[in-house]
Amino acid sequence: MIPAAHRDAYEGLHPKAARGSLPRGFSFGVPIAFALVFAAASAIASEARAFQAAPQLQGGDYAGPDTCGACHEEIHTVWTDSRHANAFSSPIFQQNWAEIGSEFTCLTCHTTGYDPSSNQYAFEGVTCEACHGPFLEGHPVEPMPIQADAELCATCHTTTKNEWDASKHGQVGIQCQSCHNPHSQQPRAATITELCTNCHKERGDTFTHSTHANAGLECSSCHMYTDPASGPPIQGLVPTGHTFAVGSQACIGCHQDTVHTRNTILQLSGEVAALGEVDLQALQQELQQQEQAIADLEASRSARLYVGLAQGAIIGLATGGVAAWIISRRLKIVEPEAEPDQQSPPSETGSETAAGGTEGPTP
Image (cartoon, rainbow, N blue to C red; front, side, top):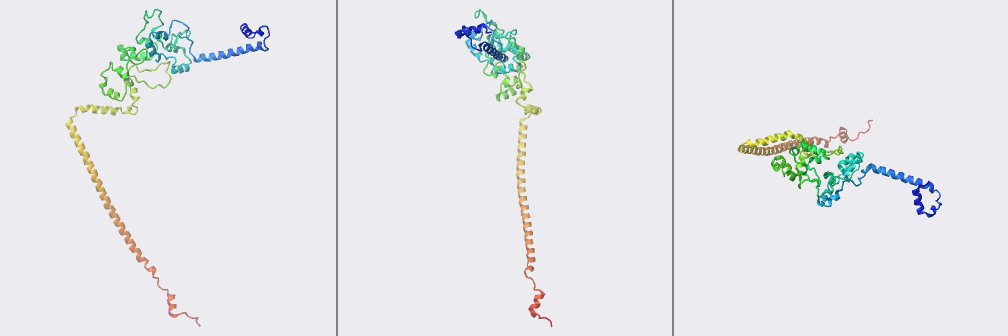
């Protein structure tokens, strides 16, 4: 049986069919076609839900960042390119979120207005209302509330807050926004070193800080060093170096080939420190003595070289003379031995033949 809605639509397109002349096979083909379409749509929707975020809330108390940007245009422009604005759309977050099975608890910090009871949210990313709260109807007459301290940031930045609590910054109450612009999330200075030297003005006079600074390192290169990531973050939490303490890992990160020469470095450091107690005049005399010793060694080496050459020449000449005498004596011995071979004496038979002729046969 054809559903009423489908039948009405078909009759509107085919007036003849409305009078009872339906095409052959229509009564069976339409339900099957709709069933296939419905099944395909359900499969696509199910697969999409596995990789897409929960649907946004419709309406609610959140006005959205564009509403705030109508008046706070400059702040909105700076925020648009920030990590907060792209906290949800970031490819890194999307990859990690998909790998852990689209865990909706992540949306607490990567969206605005997340409702854990329905797994829905109002806007992607960390928008104005994520920190200031939902838009107030009486604003701007009524100011938007803000809790401008580390506790507000700790809602998401748990690891950083714990590190900060253990640091001297946390102990004296230097808050996050003292160093960070909350809208751009950038330091409140052109460089990290300029930011730090606003308070730590005398650190550059020491040996360690001056040599590292001359090599182009920033304060954060050592005081906020963290090991390179070897895998995805655990529940999105990674160390950020906000204890500001310099450990051995910070040194190993650069000085891998010299980390085991610590004792030598300490020894040399002690010798350098001891130089302040040495008499400069005595050092100059010792230096002159060392230079004279080096000159004497150079002269001795040159003399030994010439003596060696002369000895080599004498030995060479003597060896050559002896060899020549032996060869000449050998030639004289060989020549007398060769002369008797050249004059052979006549044989006895030949002499007799020459004297008496040929004898005839004896009678």
